[in-house]
Image (tube, rainbow, N blue to C red; front, side, top):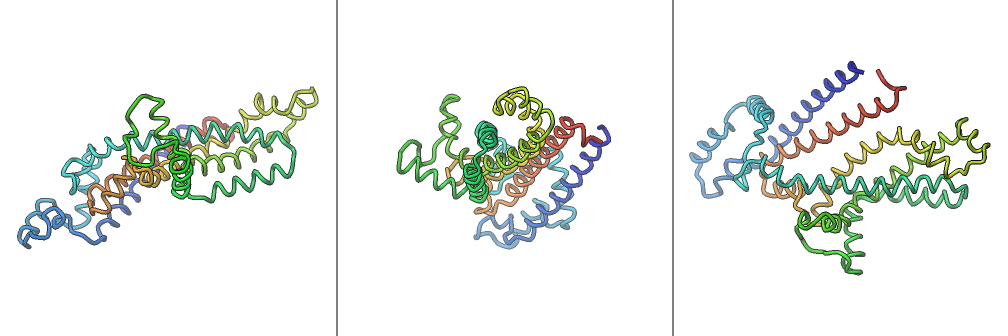
Length: 313
């Protein structure tokens, strides 16, 4: 087990290294000079060159990359060109909104998908199964941002149950936050629900064909009782991986959905930084998000191997 963790950590560092290379060099080739952005169009060439030297932009690109990595390791993410404040402060100010949205959408996905998977499997009606399969396929295919617009139109514009304009999503008590985040979380959760149902169905059907289920049915136990008391525990093991994927997709979905609902999270921050060509802010925040995703995948992978002894080593 310890060897596996060491291998995973080595893989983690290599992945982060290549991700950092891609992020840094992509933003280096994009048009726009940070010094010119800071000084504005009225600055002369001498002022631009002086600021480039002050910012270290006159150094070779590999030196700039090494300096950026050193700063990242010290949790120094640079200074925003637009806001003129440390990127770290902006990132941690916006992070709670994105995390709240991500994990609330995951919570919705699990509490809806797991019971539905059992209900669907317990029914032997082929037409019912075919309809559910078609619905889940549709749910997987529809992008979160389109669902976000659809939910706003239906529940906010037509029914008036939710607000349509920008608001402080983190204000109020716990239940007020749930209300504020419900629609955007649902937009992210629907594709995840469809994905989890498909994998859960497959895992449950595999378990149903095993001897212990046949024995339980021969004893007269109801299929639904067998599913909840015995099958569910074993069927959840492969679903751990899907939960990890769902967390990752929820983070990605939240970055898009935040902009649709005007939520002040990391996604909105990235879009604003791109529109203003705030390169230090863009590359540091994108790297931080990539780091979060890689760490989550590592934790899920290790957890999966702990839960399922068959794949240890």
